[in-house]
Picture 1 (cartoon, chains in turn green, blue):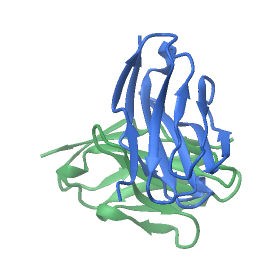
Picture 2 (picture 1 turned 90 degrees about the horizontal axis):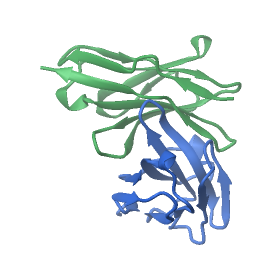
Picture 3 (picture 1 turned 45 degrees about the horizontal axis):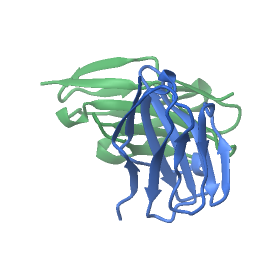
Picture 4 (picture 1 turned 120 degrees about the vertical axis):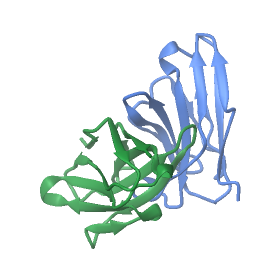
Length: 112
Length: 115
């Protein structure tokens, strides 16, 4: 069965610092991987996705993620965090079986 | 385009009551889905549809019914509400019928409380 693990429930970073959010997945075949962001009281918005090809994927708002098959990971990074990045971040995996699994999320706090 | 819309935004039910959460999209998307979001559990797929007249179960379908008579609408029905169904519900859609491999667009959510 597919599963997604986000080991960090909550992360606090200073504005301007770099950020890395961890995501590990379990899936037998090549996964379709996604990162979504949820601002308080809002729905989810896609940051980026990986299907195939270049393992370093660029997304919106300056985010990027790297797919590492050997580590079953798809970590999200940003070189310099802005206060507006404070939100909850979800990693997700999908498959052609039309099942879709989200991780439990990482809540990001940005301090001035 | 309005995107994905959900009504109502908030709802309080008593145990045993029934209700329908509405979801509509105006993007002519084939795939539509319902998720529930609970603290510490992320989002879990309830039901999905790959086109009008076609629905299937997700990870947590018990207690919920869906139908899809048009491309635009995908209502979620709670037949007999239980406190365990207290949650935030999100509807999503994607262009491809293989929605789980495509970008999904989410509605703003419905916060449901069952007393």
